Length: 410
Image 1 (tube, helix red, strand yellow):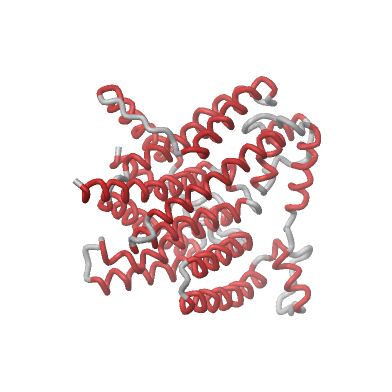
Image 2: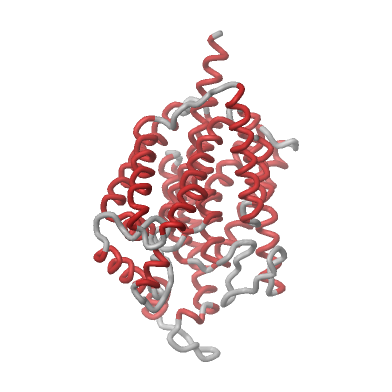
């Protein structure tokens, strides 16, 4: 199972099929092991019960769905499978050795993501899927620059904290490990800038600010805000000169934008107000229980809406598919999740390495959530797996600490 988990992490940015194979392998191995030695521990407290109630709501609303067969399929292959992935991760990562193995594979796959993105920027096409640049924006192995942006802002806080922790597990001289991880982080920052994903930039700023304040290190906080200022200035200018899709008419060569127009372009919703408005209309049609789990696109077809785009906002997406009842239940889950994260960080606060990794994971989960309010991360299999994976790794930190306390007391 652990080998399948490492394989899933490595192939996460590249292949939906290999993600599925690794997940099925993990589940099959768990079933076989549980048959001979049953060992099932429920997901912690309120967080677990909120997921049970959400699952019950999805099942009960399936007959009312605009696409019942798709709702059933996605319930098993998306909702249950990803929650089960989170549970398996908490069971598999039960030691520092395994935790550091997961982080090592994550850093390795990010090296290839950076290489693919830089190759795409210089040659015009990515190495893995041969996808072209989109208005000068890189997407690397992901489907869209915004998806790559979500991936990057989720993992970057973990890479940043790994600069300090990596000397514990990298089979290199301590200074070499720190140097390699630092260079990787800078390349990830550059790749994030070249996605020209403004929502991802905002999520990056929020997560880095959270990390700096939460670690209570004034020098680190000042450095983070200086880096953010330089980042937004350099790549903001790059974005304005390359993203002609944000203009009503492509700017003439050599045209100079006034500051007011530049700010308007950088902060414009780029058509999202139309997607948000459509989602609000769907919610008005089906206010209490929604149009059906994973049936949003089919609902737009049935309502003869001109476009078939997801809402580009996770909360509107939840409310449209599961209604206001589902939105309240997910609010329960999000609250329970953050309380559980707080408990885990408190439990490992005396262990510097685990605490730093926990802070990085928490900031990454926060960044994913922030960007999901402006894009379609909620509908992406790869990004959904990444989110639940990070939650599972974070919860496993408490498992590791408890195991070490038990071992030291015996």
